[in-house]
Length: 243
Ligand code: GLP
Image 1 (cartoon, rainbow, N blue to C red):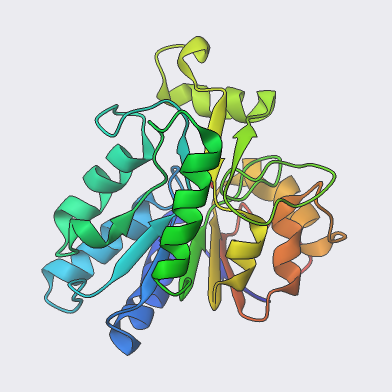
Image 2: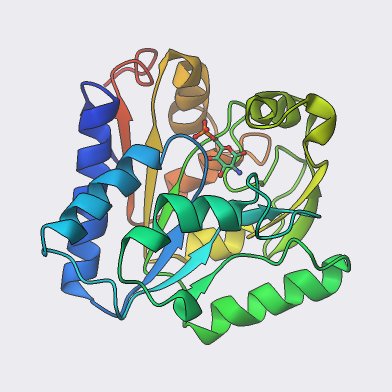
């Protein structure tokens, strides 16, 4: 595992975007695993700049997103489909037919998850998976648990996750209680993993995830076992790590 320290959020966003850009340049028809949350916003802005400069072509790129809230429609401004469209896809030349997000409107979890697993398989797996990290160590929406679910599954969001994500909703009652998320095996099978983290509030979990034991109670800790995982984080997020 490689840990790259950036001085602040802007620098980490540039470093992360450069890694993703190099993936797209080296393999123009690559499969990008994409993430939502506030962490990747700067990275997506940088990628849009790369595209606007004429230095990056997404026309043959395919994407699979990590997760989606169960019950939210694509046009709900808190759905992850909406997030991806507005913060990245509409600004670049990716073919929307090549973008994939779990279907939050499918009420039957088994159908939604098996369809998404089939999509991931049909694109041939993920070349580069971008991840953020939750305060409890979740990746995607893989919450701390006694075991790691392997494939796409429906999760009951933990109270701390609902609390952390309520800032995006009108009230805490509006935060969905469940989500569909890619599983840990799928994430671990990505050829490359890039995890980004910013801010002092992430410092304790960064220490636990990357310097503590590998345990499903800190889902991100399993990335210590990935053969090609890069962590890009700012000084504040790494402030409790001995580097
Ligand atoms: C959500 C997403 C995760 C994301 C996490 C952290 O729960 N499902 O994919 O990594 O939030 O978000 P942020 O980057 O806003 O701290």
